[in-house]
Image 1 (cartoon, rainbow, N blue to C red):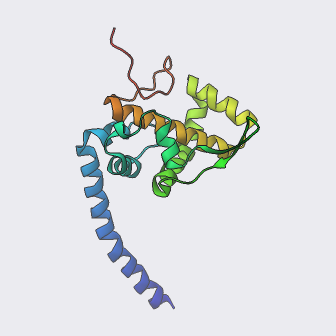
Image 2 (image 1 turned 120 degrees about the vertical axis):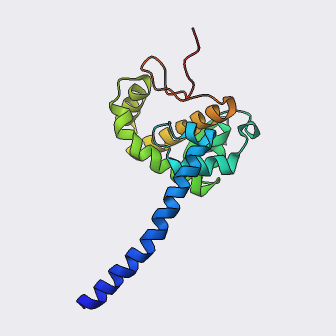
Image 3 (image 1 turned 180 degrees about the vertical axis):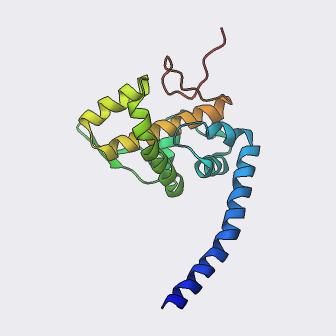
Length: 175
C-alpha cells in the first residue's frame, strides 16, 4: 500500500510541475495587459477573474449602464411583478456562470476585510450584514465589484480605496 501511495504521489508531482509553469505564464500575461492589471487592483478580483472578464467583455461599451454587467452575469434578483407590486426573488443565474462564480468567490474572500474597513463600503457592508444573510451580502458585493469593473473598463481609470471615496473604482479627480 505504501508503494502504491508513493507512486501516486510521484505522479501527482509530475502533473503539478507543468501546471505551475502554466500558472506563472498566465500571471505574466495578465500583468502585461493594462486592463487586467487595473482590474486586479479591485479587492476580490484576481488574475483569473480579471482575464476572464476582459476576454468575455472586451469592450465595456457593449453595456449601456454599470448595472447591465451584473445583470448579464446573473448577479441580480429576478422580479415577479403583479398588480404593480414587484417581488424580488433569488438571483437569476442566467448569465455567464464561470464569471459569476469567480466574482462570488472573490467577494466571499474580500468580505471580511472590506466589512471591517472604516470606509463607506465597510459601513454599507456592516449595515447589510446586520439585516441580511451573509450569502446575500456576498452576492451584493459581487454585483458591486462587477459594476466597479465595468466603470474601470469603460473609462480606463484606476481603482482607489481612499477612505473619503466609496468603493467606486474611480480615482479621485485631479485638483
